[in-house]
Length: 230
Image (cartoon, rainbow, N blue to C red; front, top):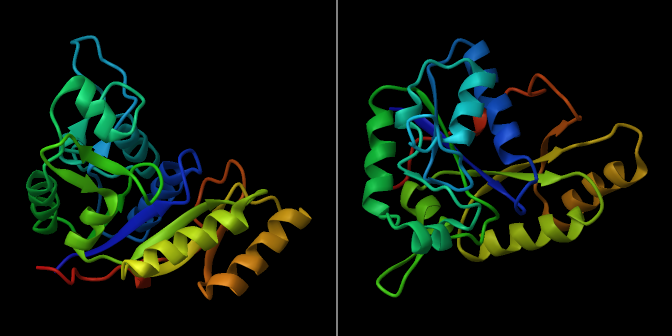
């Protein structure tokens, strides 16, 4: 049975995809059969054939070196750099939870480790069109996977991490650890942010990623778990 881990962020542009790519690369370097998955991607460009290019998926594949086809990495790809629910309202093709689950299920029969990445922050609407409401937390609950929280190490992260963790706990979601991205060694803000976030949440720091890092500095295979909801 494959094991999974869900990467969530304290907000948009904290470096989830970058950190996820380094994690998947680490699994590949350990010789693990690893895959990447993201339910919905927004803000993508069109290729020469007019089709949308799944930018985050391409980035993860390029950095990690995994052989997984990009076509299996994301079922919903949007052009506008909006929240997925708004992109779908603009472009059509609204997210269906059943389709998201089918895509993930297909990977389980082929890969031992699946790293799923969320869109935006933890409170991200994937579909909200009057017919159905689907949020990122619905996907996490359906998969029943532990979460690894990615946060920017700089100013403001104490508030962002604490509120995100508390919200996740209120929904019964497991936070397996925190990764502080853009961590500058010796910087008093970055150093104290880690201390205060651990103090206020009780969640351990898994890694501190310095700018332009090429490797993930920890073995996270122990954080991956088999799905609870099968």
